[in-house]
Length: 214
Image (cartoon, rainbow, N blue to C red; front, side, top):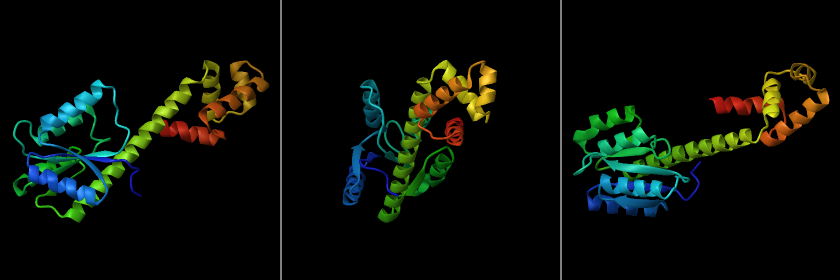
């Protein structure tokens, strides 16, 4: 399954010919791209986006050269790891033959993959599509977590108590006894919990909360 558009591939390489070739390749596959001649330029773009309060909502990945003047690709990768950006924006290193061991080590640290120069167009595009899909999946999971947190915020304290006991599998009568309220009141709260959490059964509710914990 291909990621939902628009998705963006960021190209960071000091070689203008490489940037142009990659941009052309991606255009030929109808994939949007943005190019940067240095890691510093890419970092500045990210900083400006944060300053404007713009958060990543669409799938993206980063094609990153290992060796560049100034900040290296590895140094930029370290910064992305520190900020926790590599899940939403997987990194594919572009390496020369001498850099392959370094790139392999980076994959072990969380890089999505590496492609050795000169690279196969088809192989690179396949890895880009896989990286974009991984980004899209992670962003979708984040949205689900955020939506679940918002639903939980809407619950009253009593509804939270009822929900906890419902998830534990207690019938309405025992919930009523534990909370010293009527069975009818439990039924009302239970119905409101199901409505706010957008579920139809206690099993569905338990699975939803279990997925959040995971």
